[in-house]
Amino acid sequence: MIKSDVQLDAKGLACPMPIVKTKKAMNDLTEGQILEVQATDKGSTTDLKAWAKSVGHQYIGTREEDNVLLHYIRKSNDDNSYEKQFEQTITNEEVINRVANSGIILDVREEAEYAFGHIEGSKSIPMGELEDRLDELNHDEEIYVICRTGTRSDFAAQKLFKKGFTKVYNVLPGIGSWNGNLSKSMK
Image 1 (cartoon, rainbow, N blue to C red):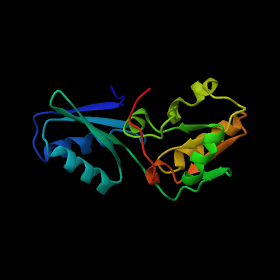
Image 2: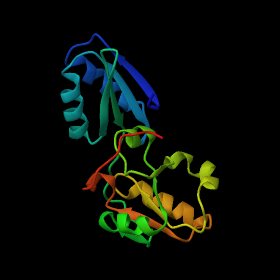
Image 3: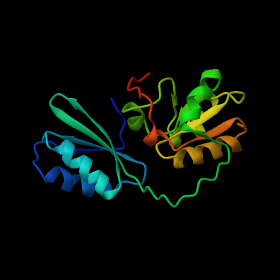
C-alpha cells in the first residue's frame, strides 16, 4: 500500500472526467501533498501524465490493483526561483563513490515518490517526518540528502545542520536527473 494524502474515486468515468475531477481535487491540496486517483479508464494513464506535466505537477507513477489503476500525483509548485542555500553540496555522480566508503543517502521525498524509484540502499525519511525521526540518523556519519530537484533536500540539509549534524551534503541536481539504476523495492 502506498501512502497518499487524498484519494479520488474516478472509477467508471471516461475521458475527460478523470482529469476534470483530478484538477478539482488538486486545487484543494497543499504543495507537496500526494493525490491517489483511482480509475478504470485505460487511457487515464496517458491523460493524467500529460495533464500533470502541462500544469507543473509531478506525476509519480501508476500501479494496477484488481483492474483499478492507481495514479499518484504530487502537487508541485516547482518554483525554480528558489535559491539553494546549503553550502555543502555533492553531485549525483559523486555521491555513489562517496557512499561506498561511508555514509548514507537520505531520501526526503514522499513515500509514494520513493516507492516508484529510489537509489538502492538509500534511507527514506520524508521531509515532513524528518524532525520526529532524527534519532534514526548518526551524527558521526556522512549524510547525503536527496530529493527530486534539490529544493527539499536543501531545506532538509539546513535542518539537519541546525540539529548538530555537521557531515551533511545536499545532492544536486537530485533524483529527477539521476542516470543510474533506481530500485522499486520497499523495505
